Image (cartoon, rainbow, N blue to C red; front, side, top):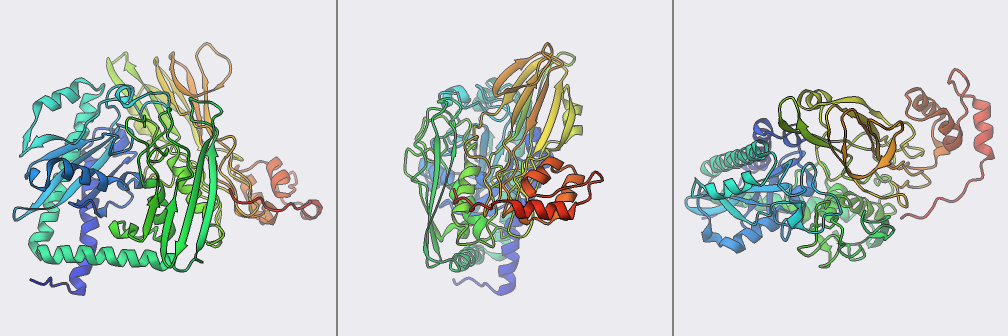
Length: 584
């Protein structure tokens, strides 16, 4: 029977599918136990077909999560067979051989049946605060040698089968994690969100019928694909390349990590080749993901459109097995996300010459800054954990300055934890949270600023500090713009007088203080072409210093912070202008 798909029905279904995922997200956020979910929003919700095609995702969902949901479904169907699922089944998985991320990112999915036929899956991927091993917080550091030391590996396990809880598996998880109330509470929330997705999807099928809904999905995929092709077809056919790097992986110090993107544009299609990236490492910064390429492509083609499988049909991705981006199990992946935002940035920068009116300078390019401190509260005898993700600066753009204090391109609507929420639940005080002066790269359009957070812990505990080394390749500018400042951590212990730079994990006594600084974005265009009044305003707002105004922008300010027009004109004319450096 042919599907009846009129324009009105198509539009209703087009909006209903993302609405299902959005309602799942609200349900998850409102019922979860973990601040990383209900406040930071480190999760995604989605509907995925039996073939692994992304049907819909919640608005603002973590983009580098959803990029690899399909491979989990393909693996699950291969494992159990299409006939191996029943109504009431709930599958839990985080195994790196397929999921390709750190073990804290737990996937729960539930099958949806219409009139006895398996149609699709309702899925949630969310960050647990602990999954055993050394996973507490944002996961183990780069020095963890294998996934067994990182935490529990859950490989496509039916924790509910035909609606019945597998109590043995539940107890194994409970007995091997430090925060069972939180993590198992989050598991219940994920299951509830998935079951809500199944109910809402069933309502859609019951109202319009199988043929109409499936026809609408394929029509939506096709339209989305064509919109992306239309954008790419406006670019000149050719091969575009860019390169960036990390100084090392945090373990093999001084051993450079190369990130190279080769983008081929041909008649509306795009191929992103990451073969030039470094090989997989012994340090736990490997991943197994298409996220770098897919996030970049989505940002370039249709950043404001809902995401679905059609978003990527005109994209070919080349990542060889054994690459740092396609590591082979059991390569450690605890810090899998460290380099992914910089990979996205490298791909985007490669097209700067093809899209000069669209491409910004580089943003801070790290998934952090992570703020993690945990221990046992001596008053309550209960474990606690402080968690927040602090944003950094984005690059200046062709028409305006970069955004300040914003999470990376891979993180959707992730946000920092509120000061009030952290202080109410954990024995710490946030002494400072503000923008970092002079952290944004100078440019005609200035790079966004990073953030500085200072925290004092009132009890003994353990700080977890990231180890990202990018001194040789900070957030770069474009068309003569300057680089953004790098971020980092400092610590002052109780018995010490001064702050000192730190990384990795550190047990500290009560009354210690930690400072997190996130990086700024690169500048866009020649800084000496920036309007002097904008420079003056930046100084007044404490975004840049008087010294930076003079040295980087050629703007001389008087004692009252007004612009000395004559001195500024003389200084700017006296500069010997050097050619803008080649793109990375």
